[in-house]
Length: 492
Image 1 (tube, rainbow, N blue to C red):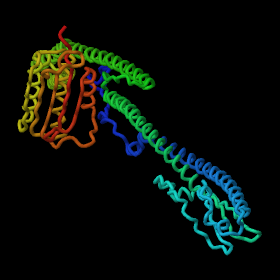
Image 2 (cartoon, helix red, strand yellow):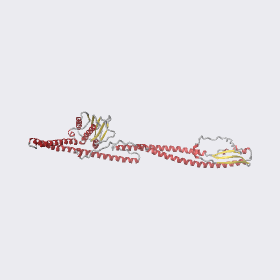
Image 3 (spheres, rainbow, N blue to C red):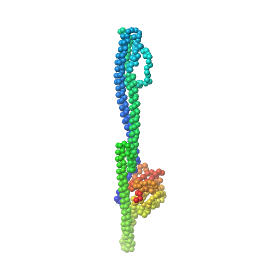
Image 4 (cartoon, helix red, strand yellow):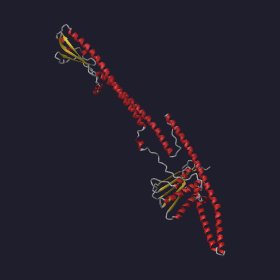
């Protein structure tokens, strides 16, 4: 195990999946009816059921009322017809034309309510009645439709009265019940009631539509706020709706968002502190390796070289063997020194201590250019301070190193461009500035499904530990693009 792997790091890289995109309604959810449609559908169904029940009750009551009214009218008309027939039979000129002429039937009996009177002679032939001298009033009402009259379905009630003069059958008067007037009245009442009911239900449905629209808007704000929380934006808040229950939920949501924001801030602070401690520890280890182990290996090499010179001056059979052993010892020490230098570069790049951040990154790209002169490495540096802090400087340096290595190793890029600088006018979460690092290449670009290795996962962990954001995606012109944004604390 190499020394850097053995360091006690609280941010040991681990595989990290890509951040999930904003949640979209699934196909099953998309097919479900909305709250507004479901509530309005229930209200319409209840109104339809109520209309069916009310219509059944109205028809039943209309049938019963029409039968009672028609039966009473027929019985009353029968009594009046019998009395009129008896008076005609007892007239002084009984048997005379004036007394027996049924066409002169009294006018007040021809137009009884709910009753139709038909007069026949002794042979059963209808006798037309003479005009009453007054014209019937027509109110122009079309009456009830045929289907409604058929639905009421009042059975016919009729009475036959014989008119006899001097004991001889002179004619017949048929009194039949007519429910049309009663059905027309019921239809008129039902029509008026239906108009009022439709208007009231339309107003209720409109009020429900508007009220549910407001509830839907409030729920939409909750959905958007939950999406913000899913994207780790804990500063979102929901305005309190007018509905008390939803307002209570909004208050709890805001409290939850505030608690998550506080926990996130504390976690970021602890992570940043851990990264700083890690860099301090690495600097200390690098210093000890350089200051303690380096002189020891230099002394060991010098001693071995001194032994080699002494063996060269000695005489005897052991001279060749001693020279060979001391030469091998010098080789081992040189390999130890090379390994020590490599460990020092991995633990803590010496350029960060000797050069500014811009110069350290430029020197890093120069090393890549020296090892592979056939490729182009470009640096576009914006406003940058010489140093920010050990954790930020090391994180940016390592991100550039890992991003360029990935572009060369996995993307086979020919041109790699590094852009770094403070974003003008942008403010970080801590109230200071915002550092942005963008590394783009002209390779084939990342696959649709990115599987992050230890390198990308380690960069993501470092950037997030400093309260920043990390993206690895396809560039706008093809190729891969690595974007890291790290906040800069305001000057104390």
